[in-house]
Image (cartoon, rainbow, N blue to C red; front, side, top):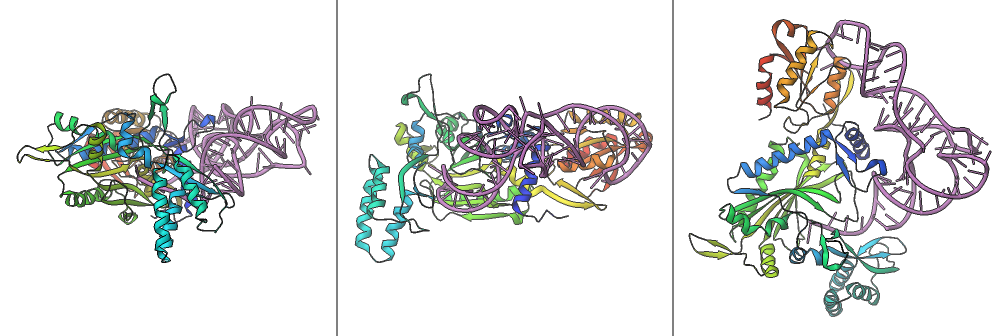
Length: 481
RNA sequence: GCGGGAGUAACUCAGCUGGUAGAGUCACAGCCUUCCAAGCUGUUGGUCGCGGGUUCGAAUCCCGUCUCCCGCUCCA
């Protein structure tokens, strides 16, 4: 049993084909030629994604007495995004090298230039450019100001030394749309680029209505939208994606302790609950922190195309609540009723991408092995994740076996996602189930008619056992705890 | 957004010195009645990504456009 050690593109192509052929993931609006980096989840995919989200939701909310859930709206008052910093810093000033056609962040070019001057001991010059840069950052026409500095300082492209620049242009990563019939700037709203702000602005609502005391958390699963310049790698980087995140509000000073505890819990969740190969999970510590964070780690997964983030655990300080206090004019303090202390809580965030996790599970589960000299393809999903929990297969289509199998299917269908299949040879039907990751098959055979038993066939080993039909429900239930 | 490659059946692909499309797999119906796919018979399914042009005639040539893959760039 080994996962395919093949070229990354090959593995990804196989996954994309299988995902489409069997109904996990289709390209969005495919009959019209699709839409860049947008995908639809099919019957099996939506079932499996729901399993993933349910597992997360239960492990975050029901398993923690002090965490509750919300489902905030995607569109919010636009001032939210000024307070959060997205309006200003989700805008990237980009400049293109006309010779090499490469694109760079204009501000990074200038920053690197200043750094280089410092390294070369030209402190005075560095200071002069740095002063320009600061005022340029505040300038009305920031693009022009950055461009002027790049030209005046004769900043060259880092990898080619060429200096054949285009204008500086802004790339806004937030999707804009208009609320109301008139396309005027007053009605401009954004599709949220992250779900977190929906939690922060509801801090007091949730605290009060659910009578929560710090430390407590608010969990949310929802869509976010980013107008990414670079998309791709199947569903890894989509412009519309889903986050599963939790903001944990703690007393200032206790955030590191809380951070470490969440770091451990979240990492183990992937291994213990989802059955992801531990060796494929990695920590990445951010050295360069975002404007809101004082500590940040990512959990990364070894995808065929590289080691990439699936969850971020960030200590967001009191930045967000403070900003909302300033921009909204509303007090965001928490009052500890036992000590009468007042403070703006610090926040520890766990933020996972459900689409990325879905992809990680596809990649981690894809297995090619050999059974009796025949190659087979199998998805080794954990039973809780698998879209179909069991298949009910009559060894023969006609007669009593079919009737008995149909009866068993009806009994199980109320509680479990099961499939009934009587088409083709039994071996072929097992392979069909292997390919969609069904962990168990119950086969009704000759003996079943006499002794009311069936065989359980295990996906991973292809081994079989005999159990009574009356125990099948119990058996499945036990496997799905 | 730039450079390179590519879009033909649900999937993998052939056809591309222009003459209105094929294979294998899959799926479906039947036979076989069998515990690990690919036995037999039959069937469904494509205006060749989309739009336009050249031509008597375009999957094939030209232009535009969309999408996917690789690389670059970017990434809260």
